[in-house]
Length: 225
Image 1: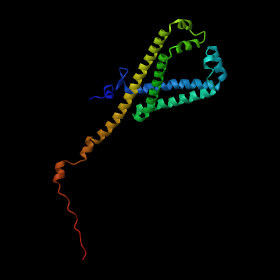
Image 2 (image 1 turned 180 degrees about the vertical axis):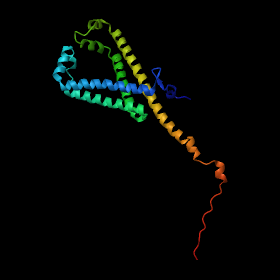
Image 3 (image 1 turned 45 degrees about the vertical axis):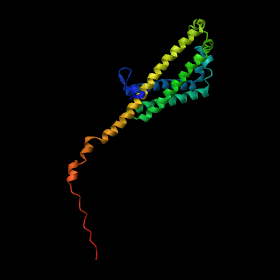
Image 4 (image 1 turned 60 degrees about the vertical axis):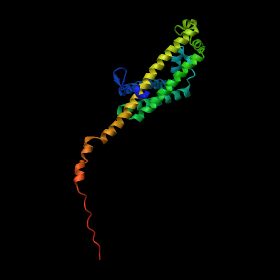
């Protein structure tokens, strides 16, 4: 009987790429995003006055003023940690070290769980969408049109959007998991091939020659008088 894990196992992703190539591309993409975020946070910590001016000129200062130095340092540390985790996944997929892919896979599971909780909170508390729209600045585009839309339509649109995101994230999780299984299985196969290779069997003499060879007689033992 084929298990569900084996039924969904495949070595290709995005219809053309290998799972190793897909994992490497995904790891590099996440590293680039977190590197950009880290550079923005470090520049904000270096020049907070200019950072606050850009926020207020963009009419977003009321929402992002809570990002003080302590929160920025925490966000920078998280971005640095994410760069490390994504680098480990990229290196593990490239050098075929399965253990290096596990931290990135755990991060994907954690991120998927958080997005699922957001979807559940929208279903349980649908009025939070209207509250969030009211907190947006007055110059936000189409704010009045969104506020005049019925609550059920907003909930449906948000759930549809989150559902598409969850489906895409689930596909990426499957790609990374298949890469982990491929690398793990390849390492096991290489060990088995090394044991059963022809060069190893040549070192063993044929069975007939072993049987035909008479056993060696023990050397004579001299007993002193």
